[in-house]
Image 1 (cartoon, rainbow, N blue to C red):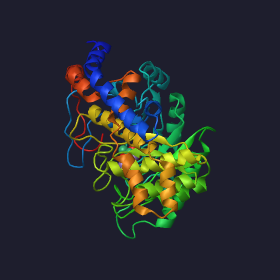
Image 2 (cartoon, rainbow, N blue to C red):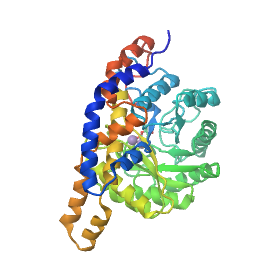
Image 3 (cartoon, protein in one colour):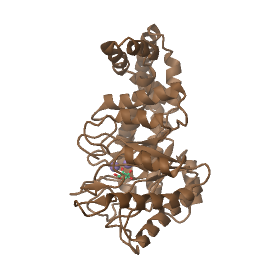
Image 4 (cartoon, protein in one colour):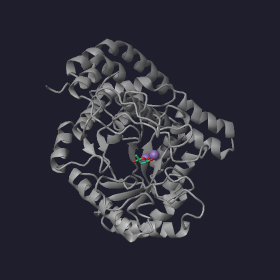
Length: 431
Ligand code: RM4
Ligand code: MN
Ligand code: MN
């Protein structure tokens, strides 16, 4: 059976039907922005230049600790995942890279994998290691930790896995390793919190030493889960201190869902920028914890405020500022392709809105202690509907004016359901 893909003909027909309305809305928006001294066409070009990596684990249906409800036509293996990632990029033109997770994405020939991806217009972003699960035939268990485990043999195994990930990443053309560990404790007294961090740092030093010259390692913090009393890399302060001790190639990764409720994430971003330690993001949204909900679906204003800090940093020419943008979501009740497309669009939206903040008016209001005036400068940008610019950016880049509608019209999922018969998989968990 030949693999179905969305045809250029369908894309063009869908776009043609929507083009006249888009032209009208785009012209009106450009006029409105022009009155504010903003060059709308230049903004469209900036939007076109924005890219975010798709996590390979995001294209399958996720799950909770209780159950996983697989959808039809799920990817069965890495090459199916690539196909779905390529489909997302074909329609939104904002996701040119993928972020793989090992050993979930293990395959025998990485050079071939890189080629297949390149043929589909995709390159590889940061590689993610996994020492939070045990794999079949693994010698030592990670039940009581990995890089910070009390036993040297377990730590050595976890270190070796991370070094393997670097070797794989080199073959894929990646330039960063993301390390998130589930290490921590579930009972007060279970673990010596100081010594656990020392062991983590010793392990990370070995991984750091294996990094190629042009690589970075991203340390990802998370306050709880799977450890519910203490986590070794629990917060940005610990992550920052660890990155500082390790050296310049170590930076911090901010997963939006990995903080306590109400934590001021945009301020954390500003702090990390200030110290040259902002490595990148795992974008998602959350209501309670590490919910891995779709980006911009719960708190779009917070997302905008994060981008406001990023644009501020870029415009100031902040030293060492080159964050990697990745999504990290778990799709339990939606078609993952639709969720990922919409999430990429929400990121572009926050980015575009942050770009139209009148920074000199904002600075003037701040200097005059005009609290409301400063706030209104942000609100003016945030309440501007930049959708026509986002749609025009997609169209000019060869994508879809309306990605989700076009995707639905194509019947992609229906075709994949026939091509990809369901395979037996675990009933719970994110994979
Ligand atoms: C963790 C963390 C990591 C991700 C795993 C699947 O909570 O967010 O980035 O790789 O989940
Ligand atoms: Mn993450
Ligand atoms: Mn997470």
